[in-house]
Length: 355
Ligand SMILES: Cc1cc2nc3c(=O)[nH]c(=O)nc-3n(C[C@H](O)[C@H](O)[C@H](O)COP(=O)(O)O)c2cc1C
View 1 (cartoon, rainbow, N blue to C red):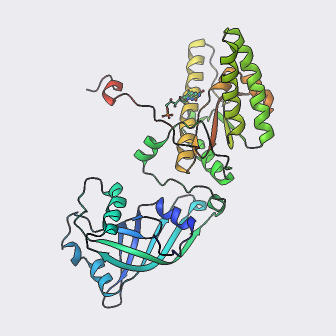
View 2: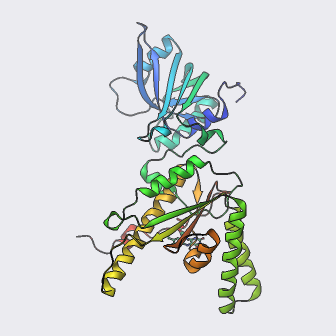
View 3: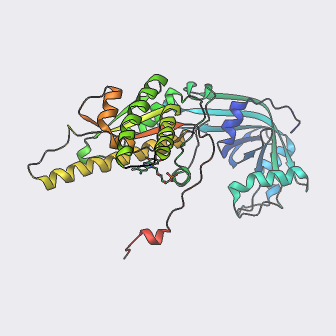
């Protein structure tokens, strides 16, 4: 769009990462009227459809429309509330609203932008509210998470979060803000665990020299293993180089370790094995929290099982105590490109019995 926008890139990213706002219009008695609206943005304008949901009156007779036709000054608030008050934020947009009722190219473009929210619902024949922003104010309780140029959080509902997460194996070099790593670890802390004993501990590695030390040490151990398997040297070299690069170039690494000292101890092997398995199952829950929290925070993560095959090497490289058993390494950062999605089996094949 050629219209100059008074909104900076961060505010637009915030707008683009959300779908719902509160729209305030002014009625003929000069009283404010507020409604929640779904919107979409093209980076210059904000659009909201007058959809075909059942309403008491025709779309153009809606109070917000009448108010806009009478006085185009509007205010829009998009906000995030979290129980963790370090994660509060809102964007206030003041602007002028117009109704696009014609069959213009802009109307068609706005419909296309809004389509993601409206799915099958017909909006093509409905007028659309266009808001031209004139002034914005962005506020957040902890600015360090977005000031660094990091992507804003993906504000996803649960289904979108679970389905959207994917394993990413190549990252852009951009650093991961410390606040986001703290958010990921906070999510991990709330995983379920046997007897509530929390048999997981985490090591965070962001310093390049430590990443390289870890990658070198793990590579040396793996090389010996691959040599035992009689793999062709070219294959060994390629696999080692890929693994080394993944560890060395990930902006951040989170190592997930099993910590068994606080678990129950049994005299018989069967119960002891079950106890250990429960702890490892709980590692999986903590791992999923890590992956989902990273994705929700606008990041991506991968899962490397390599530490499981060389726990002593990892412990030595990171100077970790013997009580910790390294199990998984999560490279974390911003995806270099969208990876191919692994298909899933249909639900019916996974559920073996339902009566
Ligand atoms: C226990 C476990 C170990 C894994 N180890 C590796 C690994 O060493 N290297 C890797 O690239 N991906 C690893 N993955 C990721 C899987 O390959 C990935 O989750 C799977 O292909 C599905 O793809 P998605 O995560 O993108 O949905 C591991 C996953 C799990 C649960």
